Image (cartoon, rainbow, N blue to C red; front, side, top):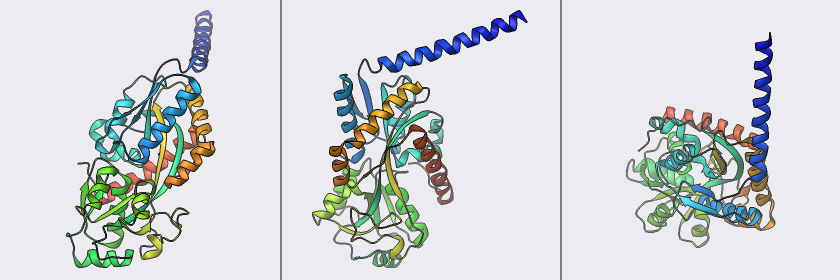
Length: 325
């Protein structure tokens, strides 16, 4: 009986010490450089988000915050780096749609995004836009479908890599329209858009903030948006669903995670700061100008959202037999 009482006393003491240590960690956090890892090349909204948050962290806490771009393998390289980093809140990962595909596409890495990361905050959402090079003789989604069926295997499309929202947007489109369009993967939106403008590729589904400037400049022809309803950013554009592909819907998204095991109080402190940044008028203006709706919310909400995305797109990957490059 005495041994059991001693064991319970020790366990209670350890819990108290752990709680006190976590509280102390959160109170003193941050006291050194925060590293924000962007698993994509510079130039796209993921990078913009990472740099915005790093700048605001530095303003708020008076500690350096740096951005490191670690692109490759549909964001899996950067994700793997962060997953293996110390769980102390000093290494964060900017995540987007491809993050939810890591489990199903990069099985050899042994990573599980629902197990190996602590969600911090959901930052924004945006539809993709279907665009074509001006030389492609299609002015509507219906005309593109007809063209692709007339010329199976001759049209090609760019993506930011296997497992990206660009890639899955087109693979879902191909499946639902019974068309054959060749995949040309790139390591980011910037090089994909560059080759689209040069006519090296014919078609691209891209996040609104990445392609909207080219649409407004008349350098590409926009055919439709991937959201269920028309986007407030491009109300003149029909949805792909209303243009002959009923039921079609894809949403790109952005957020922040930390390594699993990061103290909850530190995650809560980061979540509060990210939500503060998202609520700033200048942030909202910057997001909306880029074509992204700010989201925000709790870490728990974001965790549930990620689990849903992993399940949804894992089924699509399996059914379409998509494999990582």
